[in-house]
Length: 462
Image 1 (cartoon, rainbow, N blue to C red):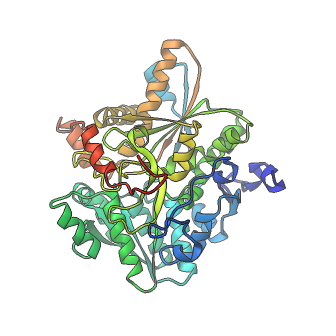
Image 2 (image 1 turned 180 degrees about the vertical axis):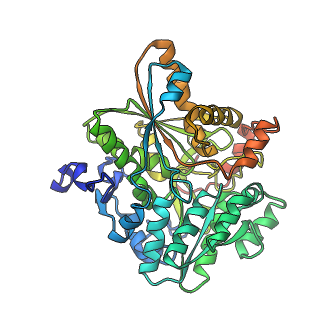
Image 3 (image 1 turned 180 degrees about the horizontal axis):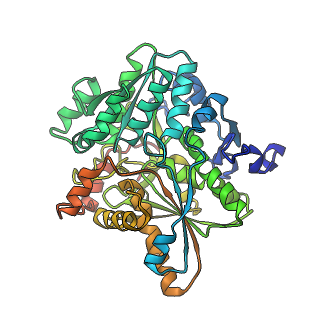
């Protein structure tokens, strides 16, 4: 182990306990995530190939699985200081309501203007685009949190922002859409007829309500066909998990300060950005054999990539214009049911988290959305924060763990990620309150359709 790896993580924190560096958990993984592949050659993607899509500095971060810490540029730290460190809160009222001996803590990432954790990576990616002299960036968004955060970051840095928003979210969440437009972003429902790949998807899936895979395809095409633009992504990629490590670094610093050690750490999981960020330094300790924790990824039953997906190479997008990533996937053609009200609708999971899950370092479970919204409202009534539907997946399982402690008498310490607020998700809350929300669990036959599109080559058979 290098001398750099032996340096305690605390040295990478400022005096106010806000991280001065991002932590790259890949550096401590014995089994590194499999490299992303060029779909044409099936060889690992090179820096030169990636830089046509992503900013140069982000390409370097994406490909680096050995450097444990990346210094956060001063300009980004100055921006972080507007809302970081974010609160680590003990849920006393929830504990009393549940009558549990468990101690429940949540790391609250909704106390910034964008309303979610997504701003941590949005400002970093917009900064590197600005530093490279680009005109703007393109991206996709599902529930709208990432698009909101990126539009805010781009407005702050005065660069253009083009967002392709999953069509059903575009229609279900008009207020989130309008916040993006208020910050100056151009928002297009996806799939659209403004791109070649969008027209192709519309022809193949008439009347589709869209998916993140569709929106990614359109955003990538928009980036590579416009001079001075690059594509940025709000989850899944290793660079995003790197930026989001500020969540876990702060949480660990606060808990260490008061001598608290969590027994179980819970996060909602769609593409993996918040979960990967929350668990990063704790997982680092587990990988190095310094401490042990139980990690639980919570995903929607309607889009269960970890719990029912296949661990294979797959396209990162529906249009199949992006590189191949080895991950737990439902197939790039999988489109969540239109009644799925929250985010967490990506067909695959971060390669980093997929490898950790495959190697047994973390668990995964799926929950149905009516139970999720019940947990959200129960939490709001006692803790005073209306959570994003995505965050409420973690709340549901945290409550379940606390109730188990009530039955057994165990005094476990539970930490979960409250990734953002749900004040722009009131259409979904309205459906739940009106009894109009239903649960949908895809059948094996439904999933088989997505698996059929997984690329077949030696060593990648399902």
